[in-house]
Image (cartoon, rainbow, N blue to C red; front, top):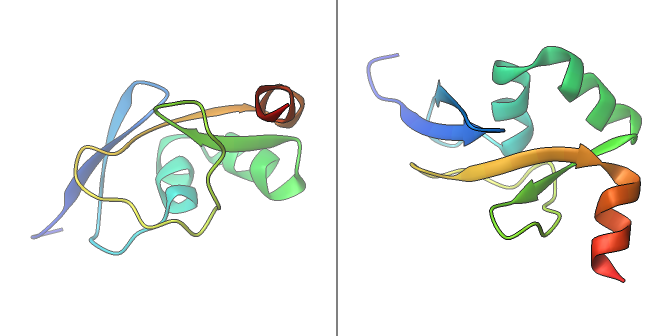
Amino acid sequence: MSESIRVFVNGAGVSLAPGSSVLDAVQAADAAAADEIRAGTRVIVDSRGLPVANDTAVHGGYVMRVVSARQARAAED
């Protein structure tokens, strides 16, 4: 990748093409976690712990975590 952005998934840095989504980032960092997100058992949250849509575009320095779907629902209540 000649032009890439650096984002962080569960503390691990990954480089992606501009326009990539949070799900693309998780896929690059941990394919098994991406499969769990697609299955609905895990979700992506931002640095504040708020769930984000899988197609949310990332930008340089974006920080996200993968958590259980149950944990994310509890945080919303």
